[in-house]
Image 1 (cartoon, helix red, strand yellow):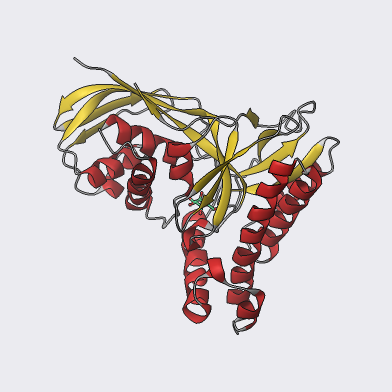
Image 2 (cartoon, protein in one colour):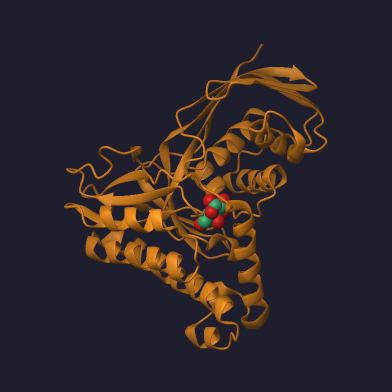
Length: 335
Ligand code: GLA
C-alpha cells in the first residue's frame, strides 16, 4: 500500500495583524515547528491517532457537520474533508512539534497537512483558500488567509510579504543579524472567536462608508463618524503602512526602523484595535527593554497568546519563559 508523508509548518507573524481580512498586507514566516502526517488510503473513513492528543479521530465519510465532530481536534480534519467532499479517507498518525493553542497556527498546519494527505490541491493559493474555508467551517471563526497561506507557501530563510487581496507573495530575506523568538504570555487566548468576528464586522462597517480599507487614506478615515469604527479602520490603514516599512527595513538591514514599526504595531493593536491585554502589554514592554532586542509585539489574533521578538542572535529574550526560537522554514511538503 502506498504511504503518503506530509509535513506542514506553523507560522509566526512578524507584523501586519488584523489586516488579512480586508485584503491588506501581512509579513509572516513559516517556522521550523509543524505537523507531520503519515497515512495510507482507507475507504470511506478517516482514522488518525495523534501524539499530541489523548483521543484518536474516527470519522465516517462523507462528513456531515465538522462542528459536531469529536474529539474537537478532529474538526479541522473534518472541515478539510468536507471542503474536499472526500468520500475515501486515510488511516495513519499525526506527529506534532508545534505547541497547541499558542498562537503558532497549529490548526492551520493541521488543515494544510490533512488537505495534502487527502489529495487536496498542490497549488499553495488553492490549498490555502480551501483550508481557510475549512477553518471557518470547523470553528465558526471568520478568519483570513494568512495562516494557511504561510503554511502552504513558506520560503526557507525568508518572511513572506503577502498582499491578501491579490495573494501576491514577495519573499523577504531575513538578515543574519536578526533572530526571531516567540514568547508565550501565559494567558490562553480567550474570547478570540467572538471578538475576532466583531472586529471583522467593524472593519466591514468602515468599508461600507469609505470603501476598501486597503486603499483608504487618512482623509477617508476622517469621514468615519463613529469613533470606535474610525479607530478600528485607523489600525488597519496604519498597519498596512507599517508592514511596507518593516519589509523595506528588513531588505535594507535597517533594524531601527523595523523595531519602531513593531512597537507602533503593538500600540495600534492595543489602543485602536483593542485586541491586547494588560499581560501582553507588560510582556512587550519588558522584552522591548532587554539588551539586544530590536522589537517586540503581540502576534496573531491577540486576546492573550504570544509575543514575537526580533533580536540579536547573541541574546535569548525568552529565557526562563515558555518560548520558542524559530527559523524561517519552507512551506508544506508531500512525499
Ligand atoms: C488569526 C487569523 C488570521 C489573522 C490573524 C490576525 O490568526 O486566523 O487570519 O486575521 O488572526 O492577524
